[in-house]
Amino acid sequence: MPQPPYHTLDLHFLGRRGTIAAYFIPHPQGGVLIESGPGSTLPALRAGLAALGVSPQQISDVFLTHVHLDHAGAAGWLARQGAHIHIHPRGLAHMVDPTRLLSSASRLYGEQMDFLWGEFLPVPAERISAMQDGEVVKVHGLEIMALDTPGHADHHLCYLYADTCFSGDVGGVRLQGTRHLRLPTPPPEFHLEKWRLSLETLKRAPFTHIAPTHFGAFADRDWHLATLERSLDKLESWMEANLPTLNESDAALLAFSDWMKGLDAQAGLPEGLAEAYEMVSPTWMCAPGIQRYWRKYRSPEGQATAPAGPQPNGSEDTPSRTSSR
Ligand SMILES: [Zn+2]
Image (cartoon, rainbow, N blue to C red; front, side):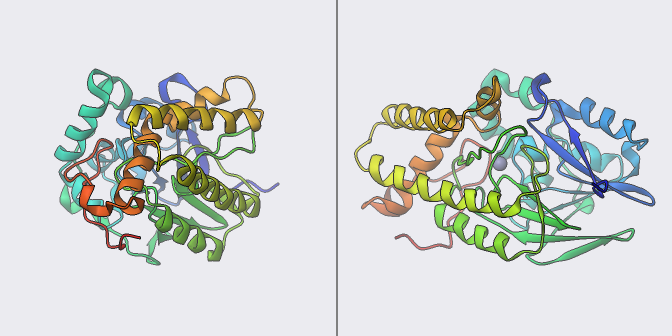
């Protein structure tokens, strides 16, 4: 097989292999990154680049799929080394002034915040720009296209380069060594219908390989997208069967967790892999995401009951443009 025109950098999140990736695409002046990973894995990022003979100062551009800490946390540091950062228009302000992002994340992670995510430096405003849907950025002979792909987060982009789609979180979480997909559905922006539209966008897009941030490239695009579709259908069925009667958050979390474990078990995951899935897409984070979605868009009370204000995973709770159903 020919060498892919990019390198998967394993950021060894919490010392574990194969959970968070950054992708390095070389160009004549160094290269670009898709994702920066969190601040806590900067040493692994630097080691990965050094192994390729690249210094952080040779990273001309960083393309972020979204602002969540495991994807974008080290971007501010890379910007200070000279990189230009690219992101969805709705994520840009959070990178320049991450105060709200970090305070809501701190409420969620508490004393674990630093240990898990490390330092999140702001990106200087002159070192960041927004990419629109379908926009192509040309960097030293590379052409990278952004696709607006909400569903996991409203401000989510996928990137197309060569034969690969770098799918961030909207392509699901799929770890190496198994054919198993998990949907990361954190609050406050998980939205089933938007996710389905993004899936249609991906189906139309020209690529053969899909590379989720969690983790690595896969050559079976059709299987992956079909499984993503089935996973969204299964999740909707589960929500319809369970959420109307599970009013208590704790009960919903318990039922959801049992269901997720059941799916892991059906997949026959190799030793240790269920823990790795839980590490990058924890059930305790996904359950409130689907509950919030249900309350806001699917329950009879609808949007009237939706809480306002910044939400735990660090995104701003902006009003949705999609009408309630
Ligand atoms: Zn995310």
